[in-house]
Structures are given as structure tokens and as C-alpha cells.
Image (cartoon, rainbow, N blue to C red; front, side, top):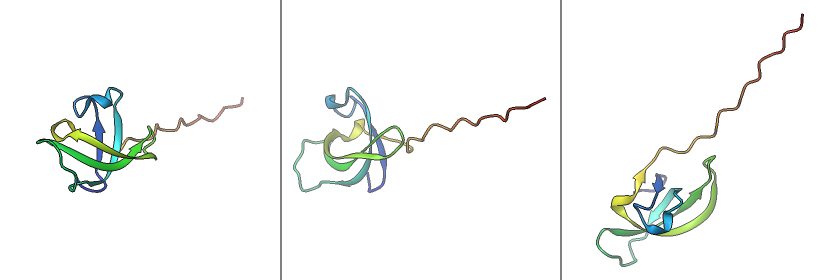
Length: 85
């Protein structure tokens, strides 16, 4: 994982993500000792529109992290013009 990557965290990454979240990675935190296969990451939690809502430090299983395209905003509904006559 590198800065700017968007990841999807589910229970596969850690039991704390029973409710999955999207995170934009700031960096991995290599100075923290972990168990084999686990990693600390620093990042911004994203809402459904892809906006950062909280800065977080997360401890996850690297194999459970899913690389993800940035969540997109729902398309705005275009109103059809009203025909008169």
C-alpha cells in the first residue's frame, strides 16, 4: 500500500470492520512492531461520496485488505424538460 491508495476494509482485514469502510492511505507505519502478516496504516476514512470524514490509525491483516477504486458519487438525476402543448 502506498499513499493515495483507496482500500476497502472488511472483516477479512480485522474483526473491527464488521461494518466495512473505505480508507485513503496516508502511509504504513513501519516503526510499530506487529505480528507476521499484520500492518499498521494511517489514513482517512471516506464516506459514500469519497470525502474524508476521519483520520484513523488502523491495524489490519495485509492479506484481507482489498484495493479499491474510489467510491463514486451517485449520478445526479437529470430532469426532462416539460413539454407544453
